[in-house]
Amino acid sequence: MCFTRRPGVWRVLSKISHETSETSQTENWHVVTPLVSEFWCAVSALVIVAVGVHHASPAVITAGVLSFASHSVPYRVVHNLDYVGIAVVSARVIQRWSVWSDHSVWISGLIAVYVGLVDSLRYRPLGHAIGTRSHVLWHLLAALFLDRLERSS
Ligand SMILES: [Zn+2]
View (tube, rainbow, N blue to C red):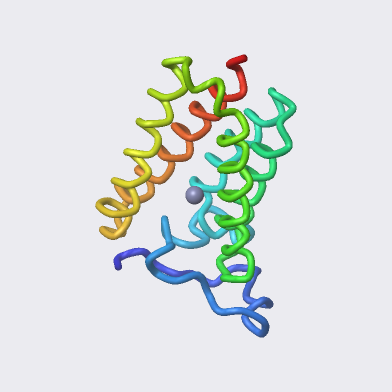
């Protein structure tokens, strides 16, 4: 793993939690600010929040906020909240199953899942800027998919 781990302000959490695992790290920590460990991934998670706000979707807002938090605070106690966000948005996808006849929904969902898998299995393990870019792309495509999902009726 080639990502670096600079200390940030969240070191206070080291007494109650372990750092996020190296396999979950998506960029060099605290390069831009000591407040946000994975700055570009956190910022791209805000696009998901914006989609949720635009469609007044609590599920999408929750997923985006928890993703932002997991990329900001590099400790497992917070990182694991990202899984809650994934569960919430997965429930929303199932709830909106009727809109899957809209081609733009399932095509954007298929592309997002493909890029998400390539990110986690191929590029993120490389640990370089390409791992960061592939994760940011995954966030943006997930936001596009969630926009299509919430827009369809
Ligand atoms: Zn992420």
